[in-house]
Length: 518
Image: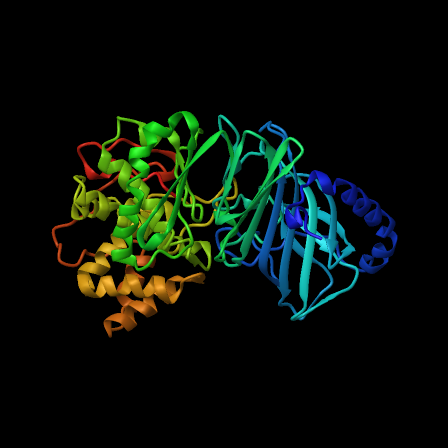
């Protein structure tokens, strides 16, 4: 039984949890016989080039039901329960892995029975009582804690509570999951928090109830989502509601004391959505809004239906209006490119960030910023240096043995937007516009890879675009820019810092207006 089902609270299920824990202990001897012949638990993965241990083979998650009990202290672990419903895709499985790297596991049940579990790297290896067969349903209940103080992403501690920043590989530091965008699922969030705090999560409200001195908030997503895009905000927040194009519900979450300062920027969201719809087609989800958190992250993040921003960035007078609005459009564009159409593997990330940067450039140009051509030329001049350091846009270099992959690098942002500029110059503005709308419609709510984009570009234009795009996406050096033979690479150009680590104020050169969005 899922925690907080029918809007009951985590605390009300603690007695049941204790019973589950005892039952798991009693059944351990029996389960030990089942697993005695199995090799030692080990971390698994789906073979992602950049994150080889992320994701898990053998099953397809359909739904997550996440429950968190927040005490009001953002330095203390949250009591949590994760319920996963999935379909088995392997022929047979004696055990399976879920990604989970932080928090204590108190008990695990599979299909209603206690199950053995063990840690292996950043995986939780689960052994059910009976082997699982292809086509069967898998119902997993994990009672655990969720640690907001863990490093490397996950929970973000704000001035008044918590928010999530799970991209790219941090969702499994918050909750057990199949933590790879290739396995999207529908989410339900249930959060118990002290009265006086406001909880907002991705999707739409699905109920609110009292539980002693606390409130239990429930939200449900209407569309499938990658784990890295989950969002839960807990704090002393004001929720500003309005209506966007076609009656779309808008809701923004801001610190109560900053509502007045942020409102003028939030009111621009409806027009920004209308602008994006003209380029990319109908908005793909059930709601949208900005979450302005009191935290220093150094980036913004396209969490599905509720994009995360630092509250100070929108109110800071040091940044011109066109720049702040273009950052808002960057995260908004991700709702189409990256959220609705998600990457099949992390090497396809250029499809997310290249498109978001492209629309950031275009929107800024219409509102007094640098022209798209100026931005493209400045990035083009540094493209070879970026390719040498990080790899080509669609073939990023894997992590070195002593660190993590430079996933959010300039080649993924501006370097990938240059690829789109080159494609538009090559096929023409009309064909490019048709391609963009066809892409978001064809792969809506799903996953797509670079080969899919190349194939669709060929189909839309009626000509094979493989040779052209492969040179731009996989070449160690940057091809000549169509229509601009005078554009050259800068010799010995010094690569910029990773875009996600800096937010330089726009200067007198378009390269100084690097994006800080994910």
